[in-house]
Amino acid sequence: MKKALVIGEDTRSFLSVIRSLGKMGLLVDVVCYDRTSPSLTSKYINRAWYFNYQSFSTNDWLASVVELINSQHYDLVFPCDERAIFPLFKAQERINSKCRLALPNKEVRDSLFDKHLTKQVAIQCGVRIAKGEMHNIEDHTYASLSSLYSPHFVIKPTESFNEDKLSSRNKVAIIASEKDFNDYLNQSDIEAQQFLIEEYFAGTGEGISLFACDGQVQYMFAHTRVNEPRSGGGSSYRKAIPLDPAMANACVAICHATRYDGVGMFEFKKNYDTGEWILVEVNARFWGSLPLAIHAGIDFPRYYAQYLLGDYEHQLTPSSEYNLNAYARSFSNDMYDIRAEMQYLAVQEGHIAGIFTLIKRLTTFHRLLTNETIDSYDSTDKQPFIAEFKQLANATLIDKLASKLPIKRNPERMNELMRVMYILEGRGRLVFVCYGNIMRSPVAGVFSKMFIQNTSLAFDVASYGFHQNTNRRSPEACQHAARALGLDLSTHRSRLLLQKELTDNDIVFIFDQLNKAKLDKFYHAKNVFNLAEFIPEGLGKYRAIDDPYGHGEESVKQCYLLIVEALKAIFERYLSLK
Image (cartoon, rainbow, N blue to C red):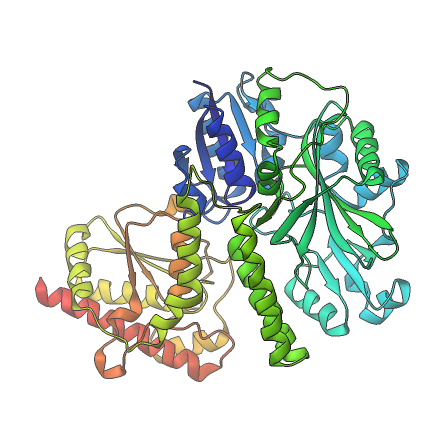
C-alpha cells in the first residue's frame, strides 16, 4: 500500500487532502500543528505527529519532519501551506529521492509566493492588477499614503509567512481610516520591513483554482465569495460559478510563464457594475476553498497525487466541467463572521439592521438540503464536523455559561497533586508556565526554589512562557513587588517553553484558561494543574490568577499574593502528609 504524509491543521485544505488521498486507498499519516484540530478525528488518518512552531524551533521542526519522512518511507508528502512548503523546499536534498514531494517548482517558488514579484509576472503577462508600490510604512502616515493612493487602500506583507518566523502569519489589511492605519501599525511587526501598498479595488472576490503540469493547465474551477469578511481575509462561504474566459486566460498565461507545476488558486476581484477585474494574488499551494472544488466535482488532491505517482494521463486542454450550483461553507468561520457582521451593523445602523442581517444570513443554511456542503463534513467521515461543532459550542456558549456559575472547589484536585508530587519527588520538576514568563511564572519559580531549599524537598524548579520573544527582563513593577516579598527577579530572563524541555516527570502549573488552551494545542504535558485551584479559601475563590500586565502595581501585588499563598498551601499540605 502506498503511504502519504499530509502536513497542516485546518478543516479546509488539510482535511480535504487527507480525505482525497484516503479515498484513493493510500495510507495517510499527518503532521498536525494543532493537537486540538477537529481534522485529527478523521477516519482516514492512520497516525499523527504533532510538530509545530510553538513548541519546536524552526530547525528542530524541520529535522523532525525530515527524519519522519525518511524513516517511514513515504511515497508522497503533501505540505498544505507555507509553514511546511518553505522549509521542505530548501531541504529536498536531505529527503529520500524515492519520496515525491508536492512542492512548487523553482520558478513558482521564486516568483509567485511574493506578492510584489507576482505583480511583476502579471505585468509581463498583460494581466490587470491594482496600482501599488513597495513602501516602508514606518516612514509614512495615513495622510501621506492616502495622497498617493486614496483614503481607502490595502496593506500587504509581501509573503503570508516569513521564512525566519513561521510561527505567525502576516496579515493583509484593508485601511479605510486613520484609526485602521494606526491599529495596523500597533499590531504588526513593521520595523525595517517593506510592504506592498495598493489602491483599493471595489469588487467581489472570485477565484480560479487549477492544476497544471509543467506549465500546461489540466483542470480549472471558478468560485465567488458569497460572504466576505468586512476586514478582509478568507471567505467563509463560497459558491461555484462559470469560468470567466479572460480570467482563465490570465491564469493560463502566468502558468505558462512560470512553468507552473502543481496546484494553486488565483485570486481575483471583480466589479460587477463595470465588469472590470484585477488579479489580487496567487496561492501556489492548496487553498481554503478546496472543499468547494471537490464537492463540485474536481478533486485536485487526487489528480496531483496521481501525477506525482506517475499514474496520470495529461490533457491537451484544461477540463472545467463541474456542478455550477455547488456551495460550501467553513462552519465555525461563517458563524463567527455572521456574529461580527451583526455586531458591526448594530453599532453603525442600529439593532434592527443587525438582527435583519442575522436572519438573512441564517436563512442561507437551507441550501444544505440541496447543493451545499460544510467543509468539515463528509457522509463517510462525520467525526471532524462533530468535533468542530463541539469546539464552537464550547467557545461561544458552554464555556461562557460555565464562567457565570459559582466557583466550586474540588478537593480531589489537591489530593491528585499530592499523589503526583509523592511519586515524582526526587526525579521530578515543578514547572511554571504563563504567557510571557516575565510576571507570574518567574515569581512562582523563585518562591518555590526558596521554599524547597529551606525544607529539603527534592524537586527541581523551572519557569517558562509561550511568548516567542525571549531573554526579556521582568518589568520594574514586578521586581519591586517581588522584593517586598523577599524575592529577587533582577537576574530573571524569559524563556520559551519548547516540547523538548518537558518530560512526564514534570508537574506543570498554569495560571489561567488561556495558558491551558495554549498547552493543549501545542504541547504534550502529562501532569497539569491550574495554580488558582489551590488559593486558600480565605482569599476567595478564583478560576484564574489573571495576568497583571498593563494593570498597574496594585494588580501585580494582588497577583503575587495569590501565587505565594497558593504555593504555601501546596507545600504545607505536602509536608504535613510526609
